[in-house]
Every structure is written in structure tokens, then in C-alpha cells.
Amino acid sequence: MDVIMQTRDLNKAYTEQVTALHDVNIALERGELVTLLGRSGSGKSTLLNILGGLDRPTGGEVLINGTHVDFDDRQALITLRREALGFVFQNFNLIPTLTARENVEYPLLFNYAGRGVREKRALALLEMVGLAERANHYPREMSGGEQQRVAIARSLVGNPTIVLADEPTGNLDSKTSDGIFELMRQVNRERETTFLIVTHERELGKRADRSIKLLDGRVV
Image 1 (cartoon, rainbow, N blue to C red):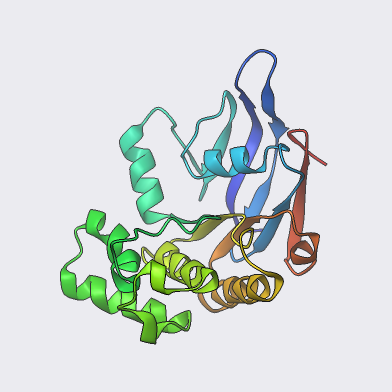
Image 2 (tube, rainbow, N blue to C red; image 1 turned 90 degrees about the horizontal axis):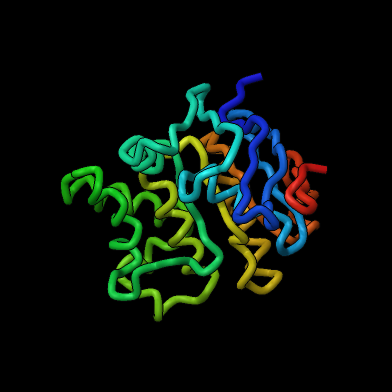
């Protein structure tokens, strides 16, 4: 088993009375597409934020590629997010004043990639997600499904080994949602990128390699 990401006895408490995660132990294998299921308030987004280095646990540990994530090392967390992880959000989080190509390119600005390299990689990814002809369009000129495709392309621009997606179909109609899931599955198979997808849609869970379910901050 080639484990690429795992948690060991992960806990997250906001106060003595409010605990979001209780001794969570999960493991993702390289190349898997896994859904994280649970009702609102079950701890799904909290877990995803910790796995992505956007929040810190109050106990336990996270390992990526067998290496312990040091939540006290800010620079190491930045490097982790830049080199190993991609993120897709429910609300797309595109920059409205940038075109689709510029949005996809944006993370590479922090990798000091040259303009030619940025443009070439962004255009290749936009073609992969079926939006080559929309490269110079702004978010306001695109549908919700198109914006999410741009967001998926952006999540892949740094060649991450893992993509963390938080309710990526939550704001989309059922047909568009289906297309976005199939796109993530395509990327997963063609690039062997590991996906962990937070969703409340059980039907999507049935189409994943497997599902992890959270209830009141515990894996069930």
C-alpha cells in the first residue's frame, strides 16, 4: 500500500466545550479518488483545512509522503501548499479582474516561473478541462460550471500530488455537478493525482474509489 497522506489520532478543539475532530485516523493511497461525507457541522471542512495546512490541529499528526507536517514551521507549510497540494473551493475563488488564463497562471507567480512557462502550462490545462476558447474571458463572462473548471485547472498548475476539494459541486446544478465530478475523475486517472473531495452528495460518494464518513467529528 502506497500511502500518500494520513492522519494519526487527529484532534481539533476550538474551546473546552467545542471539539470539531476526535482521534481521526485516515489514510489515502496514491492515485485514489476518495470522497469525505458527512452532514453540515460533522468536521469535514475542518479536517480538509488541517490536511491542507490552512488550520492546525490541537492533537495528533498529519503525514504527507511519510513526512510529518510541522504546523509550527510557516515556511514549510507554504512550500507544502505550493509544491504538493492543490485546492478547489465551493465558491471557485477566482480573481474577478483576471482572465481564465491569468487565474490558472496565478499560483506560478509565487514559484518564480517565467511568463512563457506560466502561459504555456495554463493554456495546456485550460485545453484539458475543455476551456481553451475561454482563455481570455473573465469570470463574470463564464457560467458556474466553467468557473469551476478554471478552478480545477488552477489547482493542477503546480503539478500537485494531492488535490483537496471542498464541496466543489455545492453551487452547481445536478448536470453541471456530474460533469465536474467526471472531470476530476478524468484528471485522477490520467495524471494519477490523488483527490480528497468533501461532499454532502451521497451519489458522488458511490462513484468514488471509496468514501470516508464523518459524524460529529469522528470517522464512522
